[in-house]
Length: 367
Image (tube, rainbow, N blue to C red):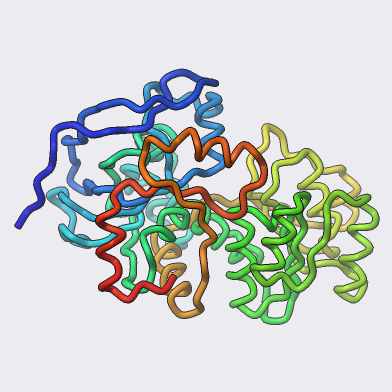
């Protein structure tokens, strides 16, 4: 029996740059394209990029519903959708309507599909997002949620998980090698540590907050280093534990001015630094990478195939998402207060539909 879909819904929206969110009553999306899904949101989470949207970094057309991290249940499908059915649990995709003809869409390297330059935009960044009762997403960038994974965990995985999963892959390390993560105690970092450890890597967690250092240790980092120390001391500690050369690769998740330079400095000669954080400018002193041939590469999200691989890996390896729960869209200001207070560990998640979470008890959810 098809679910009843209302005409209107509550949504948390950016209505003016630099101002608090507004909770508005808006139409439920009804203009599904052939590849689209209409999702009844169970949970949506906050990401650092949401703050960038609110400040106008992406030039988002306003008003726009916030959050690009969401999960829920399919209530309607487009005419060309064959991979999802009504009732399926879904981790929402961000890219909407890839062109299907550009080199990234047609490349034999599946891991670049998310880079299509001809998208209509990204859900929650350029287009209405998941801080709402319903959202329209593209089935081709969305991912089925296995029974073992809660929708509470799936929402943060939609961006934070996908992004750091690909970052660890792009580091291209083998069992027993060393990975340094700068910004290891945040929403992405604690997942990156677990992903890396489950792949057999040794992990150095570097963070500048007490809460971040504690979460890095809790997530399983082999060594945890306080980034507030002098840079030379941080580098020395990394070199000591790695036998003198430095980490085989590093990932930069912190957007502090010095973060990318520090990541390069702790990386061995000819190693790789993967840049994930998005400050206005990525600043690296030339001596930190030119003289030692450190290769710097950027990475964002992951492809549809990589996203499915991540979900299967989580089930096989038992990865846990640290969440801070808020019940109802009207708790958005409490969520923002926690996030901006700097004391948060993990991800801030709003439960939009309590019933979907209660129904999960029958599935044997573990993570």
